[in-house]
Length: 328
Image (tube, rainbow, N blue to C red; front, side, top):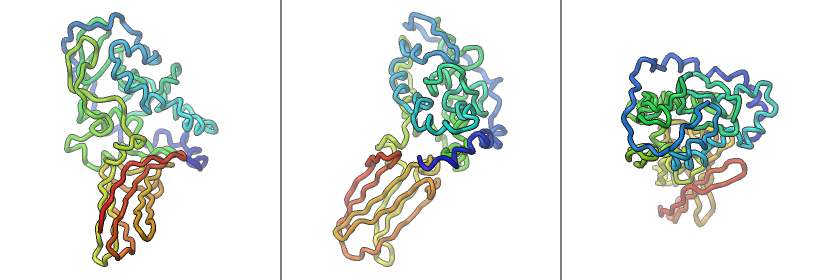
């Protein structure tokens, strides 16, 4: 993510600019019924403290699988991340960044920049950041009636509304971060029932909390480009001959936003054949936008076997995400 200085210097100035149009799109959720549904047999055995700065490990005793997934996610590491810590060293007002990297609960300020958390910042975007609502109520897609804590169904966790929660931080254009939430909204994909979580939080059926029934929920691993299998789904890639007989590499963006979505990330396409190697790079300086179809032609007229290798490069590390061979 280097060089970063000039771009990052504007973070404090641009902190709120990404929300000029979002506020008008956020419907009031205050008057929507958040009625809980019954849950019997809860075995948590204690009532956790639900202050917004409390340790997320308090949730582990009842929500072990979800906690394990979250603890290895970029959300959990959002504040501790070395790149982030290095990036804010020279900022005049780093607190403007903390609102997304260690936020107070987002739900009470849905659609607005979250408030920076004063304590427990090392927990990053914690369980409480997304699930703690007004009055220390735990909000989620189901709601449950039990003695451990008050849990209520919240409309922001419905598939068609969940982007409102994500966009509180991901509809920003600050420094190296691009407004991926805005890309997705403008793509119109949400009208077909797709949301951020559709791709980044795969479906899973399991017991959400100890003692409860099995339910259809979502994983909290929060897939991103660091996951090679997931990154490969961002593109539809084809090899063919163009009308002039050249080899044509066609790359179509199949994600819901521009790719890559962060400065410093690069996707490298290598086309190897007996006569040499053809190379194309897609970076934040020349991203492929939603549904964009980009084509690259190479003058290789003879019939040959071509090996296509696609890799993701970030911070000096390279991960192969796709490899296949075709004869043209």
